Length: 353
Image (tube, rainbow, N blue to C red; front, side, top):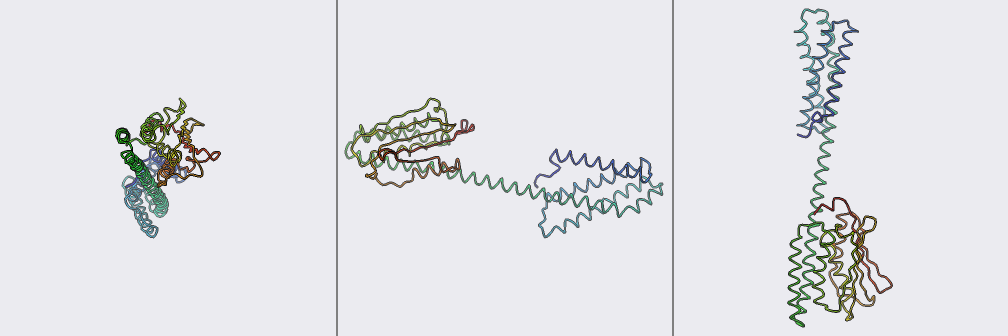
């Protein structure tokens, strides 16, 4: 059974006030217009309207257990009619028992049966319709909450899938590099395997972290760069510029590594010259901005990859922020390629893993 209207304190208080005011009004009508004593007027009003209130509670609880379809609303009206009759009969029995010697009042009760039944039916009918509307709105609200929870679970599952797919993507590329080094430089290959093991251990430690600090992410990136520097030696240098106020800002974990990998791929592959990759981290209008700049030759093509890394980043950013513009890439003067990542900062990110 869903939440009943009377379980809400505000509705319960309002209903109590309406009941008291209605009882006073009915008693006043009997006393001033029909000239009955205040004892009879008060007893008639309290007993009749209290039984009517009980009837409303019965119908409300019944509808909490059973929600009729539109084509079965007639059954609700029939139940309302039966409860109305029961209320009038019970009230008449009680009042007749209390005031059996008041012949004029007993005659009044006989004449007012139809009127009281009509009033009871109208009140109980209104109560039934209001409860049907209440329970349907409650059901819709619960359904929307379930749908939202399902969507959140699906989004979280997809985010976890993307995060874990990035690791095999990097591992595959790293193993290819190790394989190449075992042929030309076995010693360096051993060093690279050691650094790769340290990188993967760090990855496992932070596997459950959705959000990480800039400081932690840069430490993670440094491990990755150490691996790449073993492979490319003096040909690869990296300049990192990090604004001090960004060190404790948050971003999704393992998000930056594929961007740096992409910069290395476009900057170093198919060339034998040394290059410098620049990594700038700053804060602009409460947005963490990370720019990765690498030189490139527009006439040269980087070795072909799956293209999964950057597309996975875009998908993760969309799932987290519902924004497709947070990852931008552009060429500058046909010599530099700039990838810009923007992470909006929220208060809850500073405390959420």
